[in-house]
Image 1 (tube, helix red, strand yellow):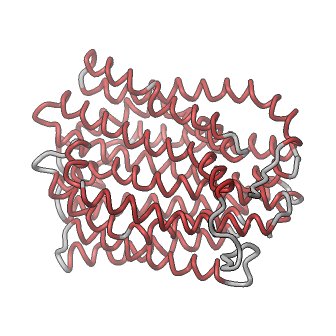
Image 2 (cartoon, one colour):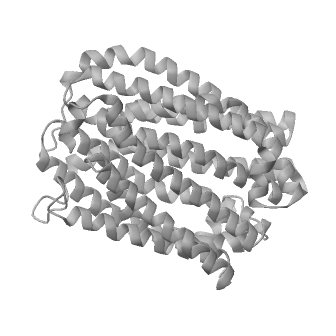
Image 3 (cartoon, helix red, strand yellow):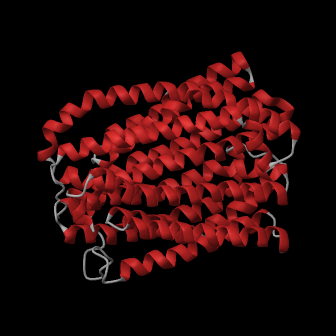
Length: 456
């Protein structure tokens, strides 16, 4: 239950909260990899390139959900630390409402302008049909996706990490069962993969909604509580702005990378984008595990920060940094030693495997520090310090990377694209460490002064 966040040993809490989040992240990441394998094997190598084109648009769509869910999760944890159940309930209501509003607006706009968006993101006449077929189905299911993601994050933040894990697993298992059936048996192609994704999320959506309608939940949807609180929404948006911008930056970065690869690779541009899709899926496997750590840390940090217990905040951060760093180093070892093995899981296309090999070895040369950077960035978000979190997210995915993409490909060709990503990761990680060392003493002095009053 939420009250144990302030009393149980930190190590035990990290296992209790992070392990379900890690398992859920692992399952989701494995699904993304398996789904790409199904598409690559069942539809073709060019379909992988088409799927890679959809990555920035999916990041952009998810960003508008994260804007609400991440901010709501942090605020609800802080309210629970202050023993304010009523305001935590208002937070759930407001997150639910805004997820519906965001889904309707974003899903509709993206469907209307889908082809121009995909072309801007790097689609060509060869890859556009695959990208369009996939995203049309995904966008139609946006309301289901938003409510599932939004409420699942709140479920974890309000003291039910195991149930949040189950919902993610349910979504993925349904997905994994249906995707090969739709692709291979029914010959639905890439649309079959997208349909399986939405049906899987629908199953999890039902599970999550039942939890927040149950009287057994400490914090739940209550129709008589407030559903639109401007000052509360202002704080939710303020804190959610950091992960929102991080997803938007990820969208822009993929666009820059796709266009850089198309230019640097020439006739092999579509193949290079497919290789980047393989690298991106693999990278996200490790990053999602690190995010699982930060998701487990978030309610512990938010609760104890709200309760004014600095030593528990500091102890949680220290453990998270060591775990995040270990996951990054493991990623470096595996991807530097076995790039071809990883690529051959997705495709037997020789040129794509060759390009991916160079990409893996160059990009992962700077990946070891990524875990530390992500933990520190999410640490500031969990304490309700969105400006710092936003700044750190921008450094890795925009401020450092974009100039590198302008310079290095001109000097090194296609390898310059991969080394631009590695250099950006390294510089952003070092800056995050410096920021933490500077800010932590100041946060320790001000911890007891933080309040989150959202009354009108």
